[in-house]
Amino acid sequence: MPLNHPLLFKSLCYLDGHWVHSESGASIAVHNPADQSLIGHVPLLDPAQIRAAVDAAEKAFPAWRRASLDQRAQHLRRWAELILEHKEDLAQILSLEQGKPLFEARGEIEYAASFIPWFAEQARRLDGRTIPSHIPGAHLGTVMEPVGVVALLTPWNFPSAMITRKAAAALAAGCTLVVKPAHETPYSAFALAQLAEEAGFPAGVFNVVLGEPQMAMETLVRDSRVRAVSFTGSTRVGKLVLQAAATEVKKVALELGGNAPFIVCADADLEQAVKFAIDAKFQTSGQDCCAANRILVARELYEPFLERFARAVRELRVGPGLDERSQIGPLMHQAAFDSTDARVRDALDQGARLLAGGEPHALGGWFYQPTLLADVTPEMRIWREENFAPIAGVTPYDSLEEAVALANDSEYGLAAYICSQRVDRIWPLMRQLEFAMVAVNGAKFTGHPIPFGGMKASGLGREGGSEGFEPFVETKYFCLHHGQF
Ligand SMILES: NC(=O)c1ccc[n+]([C@@H]2O[C@H](COP(=O)([O-])OP(=O)(O)OC[C@H]3O[C@@H](n4cnc5c(N)ncnc54)[C@H](O)[C@@H]3O)[C@@H](O)[C@H]2O)c1
Ligand SMILES: N[C@@H](CC=O)C(=O)O
Image (cartoon, rainbow, N blue to C red; front, side, top):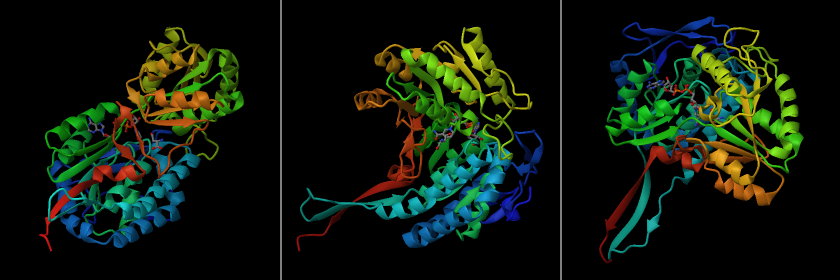
């Protein structure tokens, strides 16, 4: 792939300011999900090399935490500038390895960069407080301290933004870090490390490792020097991270799966609701934790909504992410493709009505037709499981009470959507939904200033917003006995 900045395409891990191979020689192949062609091989480090990354981060921590906020912010701002300067190259790399359409890849790079200056600035407000004393002759207060070395474990669906959303907060707070990206999409992580190096971060502050996933996670999480772990990925693996962290006592932040309900109220503007549903369901080709997976439509609007929605789904253009015309890319791997098809078959076997798609796409490989299934019921896999694919399921409801009960019928609690023009409906609905983020009349709601996260099996903690510092800082209380003068 011709890049303006060829050094951004790196096939090595980044450890203590050096680009390293695996000492054991182990590596893993990375494929383009659009055609399964080989992109390259990347090193799989062994536990000793992963511990060496923690050594490096530990060694770099004292100087990094002592640096002034402005010194840290200077590196962070330069990193963000470089990311934006090389947006096109980064988007090409991202689309090549992840498969998302280029317009979304460019959007992800802007999104990824946006967290960095924001946290650099927001760190100015990591202030403590004074406490009116209950002890005679003592002065009481708090200061915020960085926790130390942190491990950041990230998924393949947002290979750049899930790193910067964590790393910007951790670095601005004064922590040093080890990133372990998904092995399906390591090149975006290595490119971010290359730009971190160019931005002048001292050696050891920012490290990127890869290894066999469970071993790498356990090596990092069970290391007592790693004081916090921030994980984004599936609920299944999130539980493993929580178990591993339990052997140590450390901070854990989990950003996990979702199964978003999308409620179309009887008063909704139909055309707007259809557009909003297309955006909310088919972003990231449906491989998005916030994807609108359970679309609930008031019975009186059900058939007109389905007719318009089916037309819009059929118009979605499927193709390789690197083709500028594509709106929907391939699924990430064979397992995702197989489970997508199995969920469609299961829904059809149980009586769902097929209104669009329903088959593997003619492009072959891991492309699947954008699919619309009506009359979906809670017994179907497509309802119960996180539906990480370009497949929409729609269900009618007869009362708002029923809509709330259906919406909350999920182990997940990440994002939810409401379409209505009536504030007397929106407000009570918003309050009753057991979801941590609710978007009303629009699919775009994420961004650097918001507390992104989930309740129930969707996670612990929040990322972005001022809440995003929480995993990376400790409140230290002091009691200074100064006598009576
Ligand atoms: N809540 C959020 O902010 C958010 C954002 C993006 C993705 N996600 C979720 O991520 C999931 C998709 O991403 P994914 O498939 O990469 O998730 P995943 O859980 O399979 O992988 C996430 C990370 O865990 C590692 N991993 C995989 N198996 C492991 C194991 N057995 N032990 C230790 N580590 C392991 C992977 O290499 C990767 O780095 C979806 O569930 C999606 O909803 C959530
Ligand atoms: N869309 C989410 C990522 C979920 O997969 C985000 O904005 O962080």
